[in-house]
Length: 436
Image 1 (tube, helix red, strand yellow):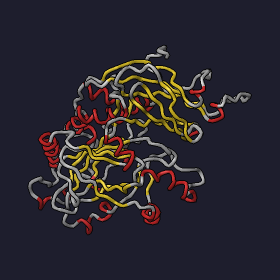
Image 2 (spheres, one colour; image 1 turned 90 degrees about the vertical axis):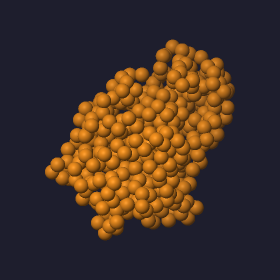
Image 3 (cartoon, rainbow, N blue to C red; image 1 turned 30 degrees about the vertical axis):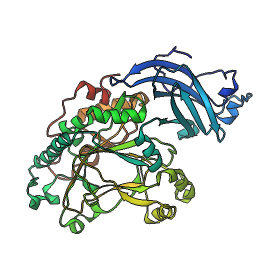
C-alpha cells in the first residue's frame, strides 16, 4: 500500500499493471490517510484504478492505453484497511465490487463527456436509507432536526415573507394571495431576492445532523453545499384560476442524459407537517433504475448535437406512459417537521402545489465532496456568496440562479437578503472559503 500522497485527487498518471491475476480490472493503489469526522466515524482516502477489458488484459502496441481511469474515493471504515482486493468482475469490467477492511463498496464504469470512463462509488453499509435510495430512488429520514427547531425555522420563513411588506400575514389566511408575496416559481419555489443567503437558510444548512446525513451518503464530512432556494407553498383558494401555470405538474429529472450513473443525491428539509394534500415532492416510484433504458429507447429525441450536459430533462405525457407501462406509479412523499427527504437525481419527480388546508414549508439542500470541485467553480462559488446569487442543486457543477441572473420581475425586486448570513466556521467550509 502506498502513502506517498496525502490526499489523492482524481488524476490520470502512468502506472504499471500489477503482477497478480486478482488485479485484472481493478486494484487499490494506496490508502493515503486515516481521519475522523469528529463523531466517531473514521474514514480514509483511497485511490483505485479501473481498466477497460482491453487494458485489463494487458494489451500493448497502442500509443493510447485504452480507457484507463484513476479515481479517489473516501470510504467509511471500521478500522484502518490493510488491503483493497477485487472481489468480483461482472460484465467485462463494467461493475466491480471491492473490499476495504470491513466495509464493502462497489463502483461502476460508464461513459462521460469526451468518451472517458468514470468510476461511481456506491456505499454499501448498514444505513437503510442508502439502500432505500438505491432501490426506490428516494427515502425519508425522520427527525433529523428536532420538531421544536423545525417550528422555529418555519416561523422564520413566514417572517421572511412578511418582511417584504406586500400584505402577507401568516395568521390571516385572507392575505394568502399571490399578489401579497414576493416573486416565486413552480410549486412555491423561492430562489430570488438573495434568499439563498438569508441567515435562517444558512442556519439550516449548517445543522450538524443534516450534514451528517450527507456525510454518510458520500463517506466524508468534507463537503460543499448548494446555495439552493426555499419552498413555501400556500393553499391558494383561487389556485387554478390565477396560478395555473405554476401549479401544473412538471415531471423531470435533475440530471443530464449524458450522465448515466448515480451523480447526485438531492435533499429537502421539511419544516411543517406535510401530508397527501399539502404540496411537496411527487416521485415516480421505480423510475430510477429505468433512467438509462428510457434514453436508449428514445434515442430519436436526441438532438443532432447530442443530449445537453445541463443537469435537467423534462418528460412529456407520452414519455410518462412509457414509464407507467413498466409499472411505475406516482407517489406523494409525506414527511413530518424536521424530516429530511433524499432522492436520486435520476428519479422522475416534481413539486406538487398545496391543495389542502395547510401550507408546505421546506428548504432544498444538497452536499457533495469538496475534493471533487474544479478550481474555477470554487471561485464561482465564492463570488456567488459575495453577490448573493443562488445555485442549482449540484454544489460542484451548478448554474447560477436568482434575481441578477433572471432579471427582476417587479421594480422593487433586489438580490439582497433581508438578514444576510454571518457564516460560522463550519459554514465557511461548506462554502469553500476555509479549506479542509
